Image 1 (tube, helix red, strand yellow):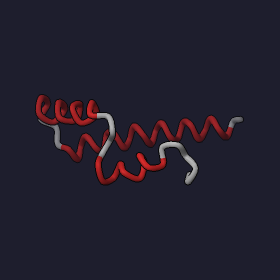
Image 2 (tube, one colour):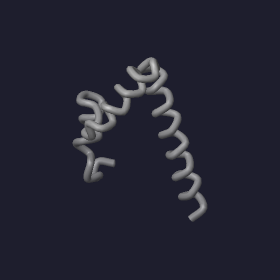
Image 3 (cartoon, helix red, strand yellow):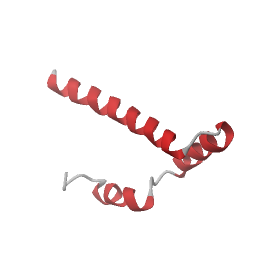
Length: 63
């Protein structure tokens, strides 16, 4: 992964969060408008990313 074009952005993600401010806005809306906890929102994001990753890996296996 060292040669990935987004390597620096990926490294910065844990420190600075996503580069797209819309993601922060959406999380805020979910929390404040719908009284969701940040841990619940993060768990939903993680679950969605895990499903997406699994689908990509299954598709690669079929190639």
